[in-house]
Length: 315
Image 1 (cartoon, rainbow, N blue to C red):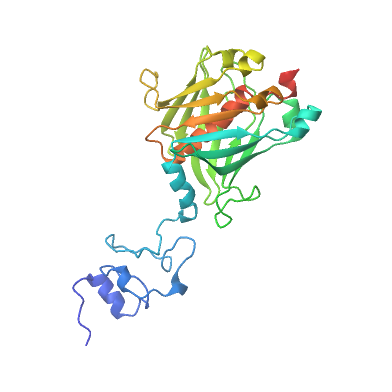
Image 2: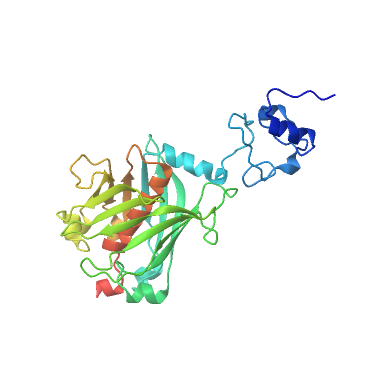
């Protein structure tokens, strides 16, 4: 005779007695680690059991099973969570230097640890048409920036054909406050919307706003136009001067408080033979890994908006 288990409610006791729970399946009220797991019932992508939702929130999961559906990118997110700074270095395009024709931009993204040691995390490559690159100024042209991870071949997104992230910026013919550009980011492993970046209309200083996937403004980035590196950009004087963009919290709409991070366009020898730029990002202390990815995307957008010199700009 089977006696009722006092730790299981009546509904699931009836299900158990009727044989609706199979061996190896988690039963609410019982610690999951005490139940033999049938490996054939595991979904390798999300580690759910038989794709059923277990109603008991107090179930104890074994350490070797992850209930995070995004476990494939945990290593990247953990590294982003720990880092305070990243460096962005644009590669010199030899074909562009020789021919003068605009080629696809490429960037290397490095994590910087407390010892100032750099670890290559991402490689970025622009995806755009030849006509768009050579006939439109850099500040209005459309492109997709494909970001691939370089940590491991076992993680998703280790090639440009299957990128880890795509930042998409559509064509915008900007005139004064009309047609201000924006960029959206997508985590490709699960097609998750990261959020978007928008440049707002201002009198003089360029100002960008970063929104998360729930349309909540997280950060505001302000670049003072009264900087030699900004006012004289493209000239020898401008190339010898850095440009600083200040990061403010999203609720500090008037930017009256202290800035919580910054984006610095560094002085680089590469600028004297090409339009390849280098940036250093100092993240806000409360920035999440997703926030940091959006700030990264905003930095790339700033480069295209104000420091990319396509043939129409040079002419």
